Length: 162
Image 1: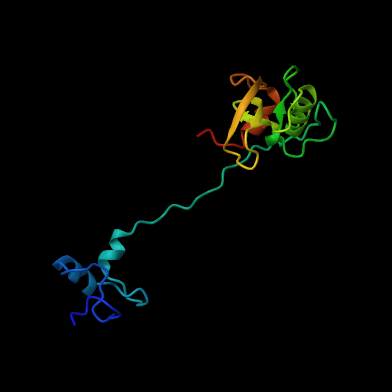
Image 2: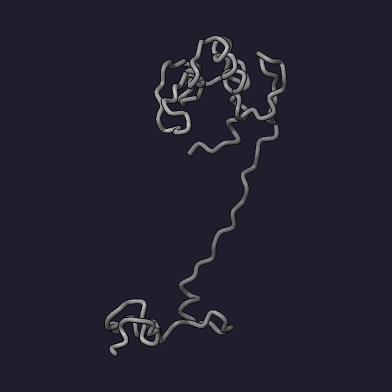
């Protein structure tokens, strides 16, 4: 038998065929990771890594947790708040979805969803178990992209600009 088929594990290689000289050389000269003595060449190639320092957060602008203009409850996570369409004050994200759902007449497979860019929409799912098959029936422009509200300025310092 040639040893190429069946259950012969004796001559099994990762790369079938003849190995070239570079692979033979690398196999012979692998450093022992458990040895305490390291070659000088490897130590010269290593550079010291700079330590990461945490950014200093501003003390004069603590995170604020205002109350929702619609329901009156405190907004626990201000980063999930969205601006009121008319006044620009922060409101709960869920309050906006509930208000749109109350104002619009929806069918059985309709749902109010955030579609991005400060916009909400009424989404009709053609096949409800398949979330990929949908159509947007109506779009609500809620926030203006270029307008920065004053309540967002203190929390914007906590986020990266990149």
